[in-house]
Length: 152
Length: 399
Image 1 (tube, rainbow over the protein chains, first blue to last red):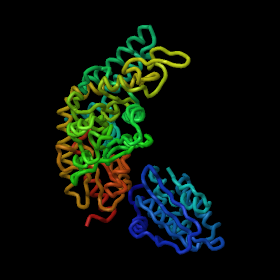
Image 2: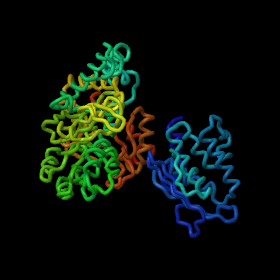
Image 3: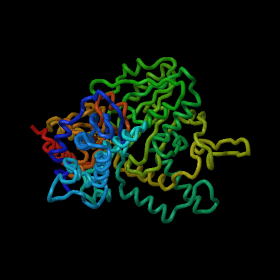
Image 4: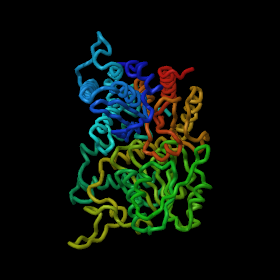
C-alpha cells in the first residue's frame, strides 16, 4: 500500500472541509478524546432523540487522518439509530485491525460507504490510532463516561 | 566528516536517519566495547574481591574518568552515573531543590525547556516557577531572564541547546545573572554535550546533566556532573546498596561522592559503552563535530528555504544554533509529514518533542524536526527536501 491509498482524495477533502462542526443546540452526550503522544484532539457532541442520533458535532485538531476520520464518522452516524451505529462501529474496528478485508473491491463503498476511504490506514500501523480516535471518543460519549478517550 | 561506515545500521539500510536528537545511532566501537565487556569482562562492580569483579570495577571507573576528561571535570568523582538526563534532573529538583528551597523561593526556567527540565520542578510544592522568554529570532531573551530573577531566585535551570529549536543558550551570561543573587545554575546538556565542546571549568554551570544515548552511546546511562562542594552538600536521591558507608537498623551513613548517588547495581556495560563513545568523539574532535553540525545545519536551512510554505522554528544565526531543525510545511500536520517522509526513506520526529509549553508558546500543535549527528550527510538533507516536495504535491500545496 502506498501513500495514495493513505491520503485518498476523500480523506484530504474531509480534512480540508470537515463536516458537522457547528455547535448543537441540544447536547445530550459529549466527550473529548485525545492522543497525548501525538496531540490529536477530538471533541464530540451528540443530540439523541429516542435511539436516533439526530445531531452530531465534531471539532478537533490534529493530523489529516484523525480529523478526516472524525468528519467521516459524523456523516456516517448522523440520523442512524444506536443499533446501526454499533454495527458500523464494529465493522470499522474490524476494517482497522483485522487481517481479513471487509471491503469488497468490486463494489467500493458497499459495506461502509465513504468510511472505506480509511481502509488504507491499516497499512500504516502507527496511524491506526489516529483513525480510531473519533470512534473511541464516540464510545465514551455513548457510554456517558466522564473520562476522556484516548487511543494511545 | 566521513564516518558513516563506522555505523553498522547506516550500512544495512538506506534510511536517511534525521532523528539523532531523539537518539543517535551507535558506532562499531561502542557496540564492540559493550560486546567485549559482556563476553569477557563482566561482573558486578565495587563488590567482589575476586579478580573479574576488580577488573570490571576498574573498567567502570575508567569510563567515569574518560567522561570527566571529556567535559573538563576537575575530578572523576564529580561524574555521577545516572539512568539519563531525566533522572539527573529529577535528582536535582528533589535534592538540590526540594530539600533546600522553602515556599516563596523561585526557580527560573525558560519556555523552551524539555519536559525533563520542567515537570520535576512542578513537583516542588510552594516553589514558584518562572519562565524566561525567547527573542524574535528564537534566542533566549536575556532581558526576559533578568526580569524573572529576584532575591528569592535560588536556581536557574536552562537547556544548553534546545531539542526543538536548536537554540544554544549563553550559559556564561546566565552565570553572571545568577551570581548577582547567589543562585545555582543547572544546565540540561542533553543536546549540548553531544554537539559542542563542553568544558565545565569555563561553562558557568554548577550542575550539568546529559545522556549517553544522544552522544553515540547506549541507552540506560547518563551523567550528572556537579561541583564537588555542591555534590558533597547534596543528600542521596535513592537508598540501597553501594551508596552506603555504615548501615544500622535505624540509620545509616553515606558513601562519599559519587557513590552516594549510585544506589544499586549501576549500568555497568552501558558505562563501558559511554566510555567508548567518549573515546570516539574525542578522536573525531569536538571542534570537528561542531563544524560538521554547523555546516550541515546551514546547508539544510538554505535548502529548506527553497521549499515554498516551509516555516522553520529556530534561530537563523548559525552561531547560536545546533542541528535540530523544527519546521512545518503549509497546513500539513507534522504526523502526516512524518508518514510521507518515512515512505520516502526519511526518518524525522513529529510532534511536540516533549516540549508542550513551547508548542503553546509558538502557537502550533506540533512540528516536524530533522536533527543531525556526526554521520549525517548533505545527501540526507537532499532526500528530506525531495520528500517535502512530494508531500506538498500530495496535499496540493505546491501551487
